[in-house]
Image 1 (cartoon, rainbow, N blue to C red):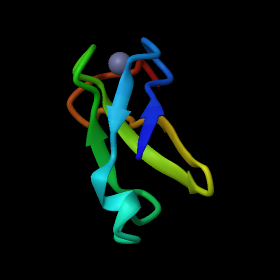
Image 2 (cartoon, helix red, strand yellow):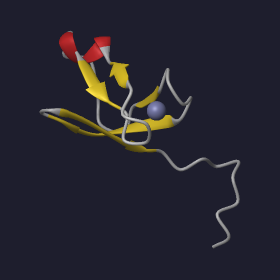
Image 3 (cartoon, rainbow, N blue to C red):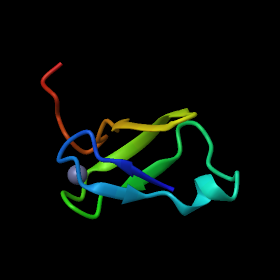
Length: 59
Ligand SMILES: [Zn+2]
């Protein structure tokens, strides 16, 4: 199972999805831009940028 990074559109491999083991909120790392990606939907697998707790977003 390959889906696209929402940040750089690189293909992100999610082998757990094929095994039915992927869960919502699971974190993957984009091989293209090294972004942390969160699984926000499973059918189809959809990723969103995960908030980085080490970053100050100026809230
Ligand atoms: Zn990326």
